[in-house]
Length: 360
Image (cartoon, rainbow, N blue to C red; front, side, top):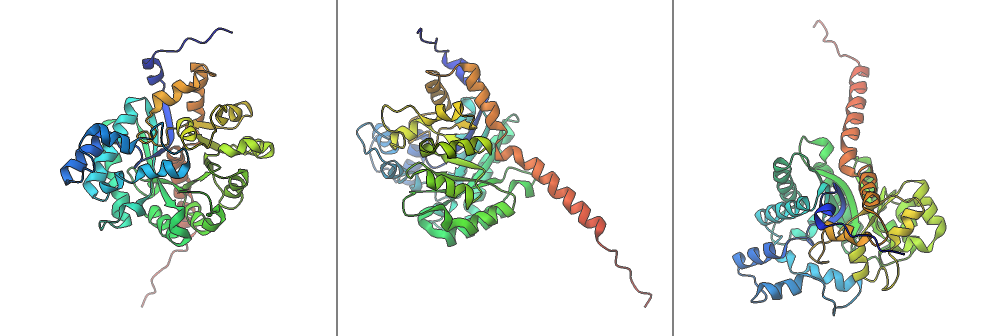
């Protein structure tokens, strides 16, 4: 069977892309991290080349989720300061835009950026400030922030993060804001059910909810994320393909899976030599999004991730994936939710009895 002609890079870049799963601290351009570390006198190594090795997964390293997460150590040295967070956010958004991303949801755990004195609100506002600046430069770009609670911080902190995320929700402001809530970190030992109350807060407040599930655990964790947390989307979800009934449910209920091909291979969520589950999801009618996860840690970008799919999919098929993913974007849900909220408030105001002053 003849191989498909691989379109040139500019053809892939030209596809209007929807990025629904990209972590801020794992996507800071290496040169940005290097520059900020030098400014603060924090350089752990003498050269940019050596810095790159510390920030990007290497072929001879680990091969597990915990090994992968270890790459987030050094970026946290610089993302404890408001101006630095603004700067890295702008650089990440600009880089994504250059690869054709036109709907971008960055995700970020504010709690791990408060070690130098920032409050949760300041940590969130720093990202939003950077995103607002980028949005002004690119009117055709839709952006929003997904606030993450880390599993290792426990259920109580998750509730605090959810409430603070609601204070900055996009549907409550006339600017870029928080559009979603997420749970991330090592899955083992932290079942989704522990975080039920935090997710109830987020859902009641109108945030879209997604969950990292099925990356390092089995399909039962995905099912729990759906049944207990009410997830709208699933991050990674690789183990779902081991459960046919679950795959049928994802297709029936239109639960989008945020697929990250490169990082899933690096963490061994998808073993070597195994076809990535994104293809099984597509065959079974499950909505998917092509995502980078962490552009720096994984050494990837939207152009490369889409190019990987060309071994089995055509360019029009990839374009169709991005069009379909847009319908599941939390950014796109905001206007509809705000409209419903306004209609409800209007009905309540009309129904409220008018108090009349007495003649006394």
